[in-house]
Image 1 (cartoon, one colour):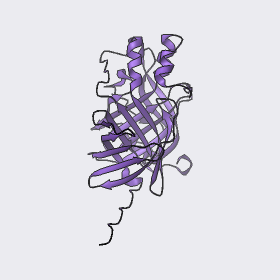
Image 2: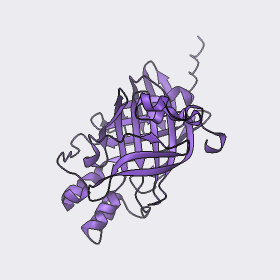
Image 3: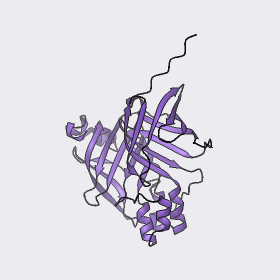
Image 4: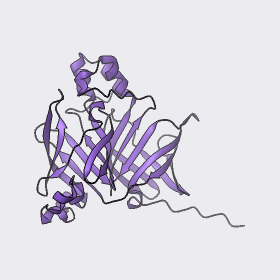
Length: 286
């Protein structure tokens, strides 16, 4: 009897959408089915948020300034990263250009489909993950962003009726310690808050309203970022300053994929956007 042929790996465009991790088996054989892990994949850009089952919520917080040191330390147990997904043969590389934690080993894995399950196995580290698709309908698009006022970079991804909003901290983390060690060793609580001021928020789009459902920043849960295009090279979002004061953050778009109009927070204003915004991203921004 001839051997059963191996299924071809998926392509990056076939992965566009939202994925929930149902299983992790690490190198020691330990299994994890309780960590809340969501991967939002745009045409090429992606975002990934991983929070333990007992992740603290802090529903009354309006900023990191409302949290005590012990509560800040509790936030270091989550993982969040984003960037661009690339494929070389059956190996997929998740470039972590934005990362809640210090830079680690390259993130690479092999993907294959087993029925409705997407199976990932590690390349540089031994692990196995099972991913299941989350129902999400609608367009897909993404933009890389730069805030000229603060120097922060960011990313906005839409995958159907779900989105990911990412904004880096003002300065890069040192690479010689874990985030928990850096927070514990912070000179003062202000420095600890600055180390944690990295946003990766996931949310849902309902009738043009974008609402954050999960975030690395507790006070962003429930926020309505209301992204709006500013011509074809700018994007503004509702945000909050470190003290919790609301304000409008203006980003420059440095790269884009998909239809920019899909990143407008309401269909009515998206239809009224400029012709350039409704067209595919200009060549220079891809």
